[in-house]
Each structure stands twice: as structure tokens, then as C-alpha cells.
Image (cartoon, rainbow, N blue to C red; front, side, top):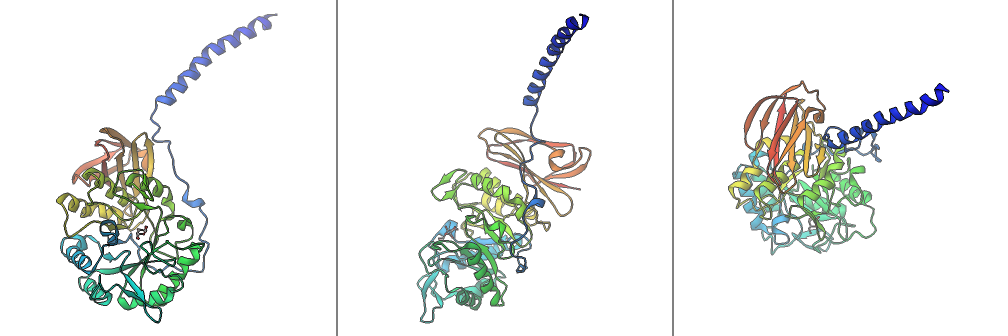
Length: 422
Ligand code: GLA
């Protein structure tokens, strides 16, 4: 009898206590910052091993390649004069000293094939020929890069290398080429791994060390098979000088970042994810946006291939491309691609581990209003008590010893980049 009265009473009391408690917990969860528990990426240790265990890497590009490529600024209007002026500028304006090394002629340098099937250069655009131009580049202490395509035609409609791989590789070696960017137009049903492996073998057969840049736009997921075939692989369609979005076949900077970021476990010394060449200085973005573009490429250990007219740069462009602290982040010998560790709305926190045990912290405001972004040490995988020396690599200010968290106001579309040393 007593039990029959007491049980409903106890249940009613429990409900009265539990229901508000549950509601309070839900509210708390919604209000708490979600930063620290957001782990967005796959575990690199669970990835499949290379499918091609017998092949060995060529040993080049132990840090992300640096240089310049003609395409983003000059497109098909490339010629000997442009390349000579670019080499002159890079050798004398501080870029060479900062690490920019390869001068790459992209599409449209080609002439026809000769009677034996060897490729020739277009002598109206390159009247002195590519041997002389290659010597000119080498005499400046720089390296010479060229472009071809795995199909029958390049994207600009010039002769492709399909069926001529060994002959083309041999010709490039005769010209003194040090870098080949190999595109993917007019390839029909060709298998990408086979096509790129064939050219890799042809380059190797020349006996000349030639850095191999795969430009297959990520279609056949080259990060799964390219590690021992090439030194870098494009992960996306073409970049365009816009902040975000898809524009025809091309992508704005922020959209490219979203496509390249999740692939961070696949990059490492000798084989890098390539989110495409830089647009810094081409005029479509603000200085803050170009600063964000360059910082994100450095965080992602991306090849730093300038794509502007380096013979005619504003001071702002120069300050970005020549920021040695940011370049050092990109070139860190540990070779781990940094990645996003937290995202709330338009606020992002990125981290890149460094060879000296330190970390690089990037606060990125993708939004249109200034905002305060907070990064706590849990996001860096560190206990709150760990003290690290901070340096803001864009304002060039030392921040003293930091621990537990770092926060800053970040301007629209801009970044704050802090190198944390131990
Ligand atoms: C493709 C590549 C570009 C450039 C052009 C040249 O679009 O992705 O980087 O090389 O071809 O035609």
C-alpha cells in the first residue's frame, strides 16, 4: 500500500529534477565554444600504403618547390623577353635570395615536331632557342622549368607528349630543363597513374635530375599513387585571382583552400599537395586577401610558385612574396602540412607543427566584419601550462612568452600568423 503511494511520488519528483537538468545541459552545450572538440580531419595513420612499393622517389623537393611560372599573368603570351626579364628580376630583387629558384615556362612555348618526332620550340616567340635561354637562366643561378601534357595536345592546343614521352624527356634534358609541369588535357581514356609513371620513368632515363610536377587537377586522386612518381600534384582545378567560389573551370583562393586542406596527411618531403600557383600581385584581391592567400599556402606546405609580373611589383606585393618568416614556415624541414583545427562560422584556427618542436598558429577571418578569434592550447595539442615564445610574422612583433591561449582581433579576409617557439 505504502509502496503504491510512494512510487508515483518518487517518479514525479525525479521527473521534476531531471527535466530541468537535461534542458540546462542542452543549453550549456549550445552556448559553449565548440572549438576544442572539433577534430575535422582523418588520421594519417589509417591511410593505405603506396600501391607501387618497388618504385623509388627521385629524391628532389625535400622542401616545397619555390619559383615562378608564366601562366597566371601571361597565359599564352609568353616569350623569350618575358622569361629573360623575369630571370633578371628574380636574381636581383631579393626573390632568389629568399628561395625562389625555378623559372617555369608554361603552355605555348612549343613549335612543331621535327622529321624524327622531336619537339622544337616556337622560334617566333623564342628566337634564340631554349638551349640559350636555359643557359641564361642557369647563369643567374636559377633553374629552368618547362610544361607539357600527357595527352595528344596541351590545354593551349600545342603538341602533347603522348607517345613521345622518352623523346620529349631527352629533348628537355638537352635543353637543360630542371623541372617539368605535366598537364592533363586531351588524354581521352588514358589512365593517369600509367601516364604519369611513364613520363617519370622517361625523365629518370635521361640521367638528369628533373623535378616532376603533376597537373592532373586531382581528378584521379594523385595523392593516393603519386608519392614515388612526382614531387607535387595539383589537387584542384585552376586557381583564379578571386577570393572565393567557382568561376567556370577555376576556383577562388578560399575555395581552393577548402579542397586542398583535407589532403594534409598525404604531403611530405619529396611529394607535396599543390593547390596551384600564387595569384599574389595580380590585382584581383586586396592586400589583406593576398596576405591570407600567401599565409595559407605556407601553412599548407604548398609549392610557392609566384604567378605575377615580378619585374613590376608594388611594395605591398614585394612585402608579401619576400616575407622570410612566412617562407620559413612553408619550407620547414619537418614537411608536415598544417591544417584547420577549429572552425566556427567564418572564424578558423589552423596549426602547423615545426621541426624545432614549435607550432605555427593561424587565425583566419573569412568573414566581412572584424572579429576576435581565440585559439587555446588544446587546439595545438598542448597542455595549457606550456609556455611558448610568440612572434607575429606579419607585424614582425615579438609577443613574449605565451601560455594557455592566444586571441586577437582579425580584420575581414585577413589573417594573424604567429610562430610559437619553445
Ligand atoms: C591547365 C593547367 C594550368 C595551365 C593551363 C595551360 O589549365 O591547369 O595551370 O598550365 O592548362 O594551358
